[in-house]
Image (cartoon, rainbow, N blue to C red; front, side):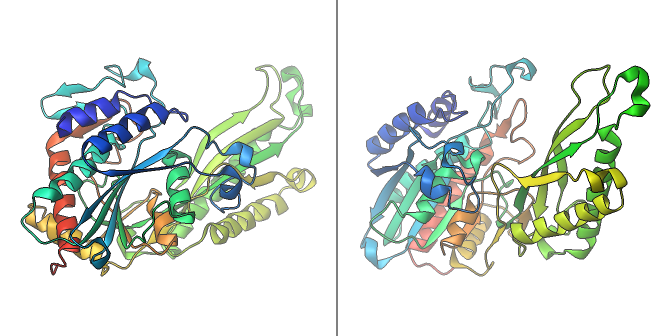
Length: 412
C-alpha cells in the first residue's frame, strides 16, 4: 500500500462524533504490517474533567471506545538519541453532504487535487507522517533514537487523545520533541492561539406582537453586548501585540457562532442564548482573557436599567484551548527549517496561527512542539475540503529529513 492508497482508505472511514474505533483498528493493523511497535490508549474522562481545557462533568467528555493509536520505530541505540513524536488526529468534523459536490467520505481526484472530508484536516497528513517514519529505514545516515507516529482521537473536542498522552505518558520512554501535522501551508508554526468559549444568556419579557411595547425585547440588549465585545476585539487588536500575528487583520477574533432567541414569530423574544468564541493571544491565559470580557459585560449591565435588574449569565461551556508557543531556537524547529530548505521551501520563518492545536498539550508537558503540515486551514471544516497532493508528498519528505537531522545529530 502506497501513500496515496493509505490516505484514501483512511479517508473512507467516517470518523465524526466519536466514531473513530473502526478506523483506528485498521490503522493499528497497517502500522503492524509496516513493522511499527503498536501502542493504544483510551483517555479517562474523570481525570480529563480535572484538566482546565475540559468540562468539569466527566459525562460531557466522550472517551469510551475511542482508542488513540501510535506506532514506534527504533533506530541504532534508541536510548542514545532523541525521541521524536509525529502527531496527527483521526477525528473529523461533520460534513453536510448536500453542499458537497461529491460524497465527502469518498476520495475524489481532480488531477493532483484530492477532495474529501479529512483530506486537509488531517488524514492526508497522518499518512505522510506514517510513510515519513517508514522512509527512515532507507536514509543514508547513522540514526539513534525513536520516532513515534500518533493518530489520536478527539482533537476537535479539545484534544482527548493528546491531552491524555500528555497527562499519562503511554510509552515506556520519555519524549524529547514533537511535530503536530496541522495544515500550515508547509510553513513553520511555533505559536498557536488559545480559545475561550462562553455562553451568554439574556432575559427580557414576552408580550403579544400586537402590543410589543408592553414586553421587553431581548435583542437590543444583546446587540449592545455584541457591539461592546466587538469594540473590545478592536481594542485588544491594538493593545495585545505579538510579532507573529501582525499579518492578521483581526489577531484575536471574537465570533458569535450561535445565537438563539425567541419562541414564536408573534411573540416579543424574551430569552436569548449566544455561544461565543474568543481568541487568546500567546502569552495570555484563558483566565486572564475571561476576566477582561467579564469586566466589559459588567460595564454594559451597569449602564442599562433592565440588565441591572435582570443580569445576564456568562459562563464557560464545552472546551477551552490555552494558547501555546515555543522558542524558535528549539532543535526541532531548526531541524524542520533546514529540512524545508532542502526540499525547496523558501519561507522558513516561524509563524503564528489564530487556531488552537494539540501542540499545546505537549508543550504544557514540557515537550517542545512545532506545527507543520500540508494544506491550508482555509480548507479545513469546509465543503469540498481539498488538498494539493504534491504538497502531501513534499511534507512526507520534509518530515523524513527533519527526523534524520534530529536522530542523526546533524547540525541544522
